[in-house]
Image (tube, rainbow, N blue to C red; front, side):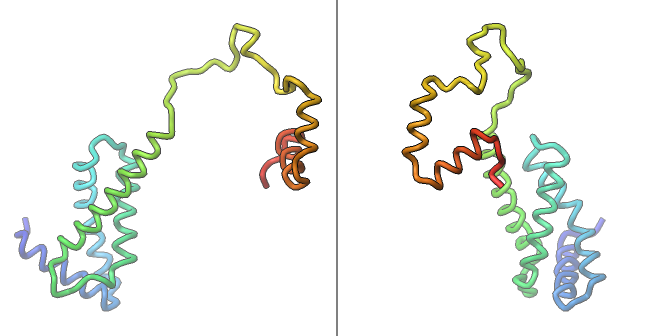
Length: 157
């Protein structure tokens, strides 16, 4: 096993060489840090599935790629990489919480219901004449949009 300090110097050297255009050094760097990133993400987000963990690792690697020019070769590599990782994990957590707040999980929902009152067809508008008058009162553009979307069942495209 490689000593942590020696390994840190090796990663920093790989990154310096990658910044200078050495594609082999960049490939070696990515191959070395990817399993570490997986472990970090898995440890921090143990509730996620494998595909979500892989998505986060890919986001971290893409961020590393896009900001690789900002790495200062005189500074340690791992703290720089961990800062990127921490930011991507925070972004992922925000996405995860927004997604959870907007989605409702249901086990099974029937297509129709027994009670006839719940199976209202789309053609029932209440007072059809009042609807026609309300549509006529709209500006032409809005009226056309509603007619196309709701009455002709056209898509937004």
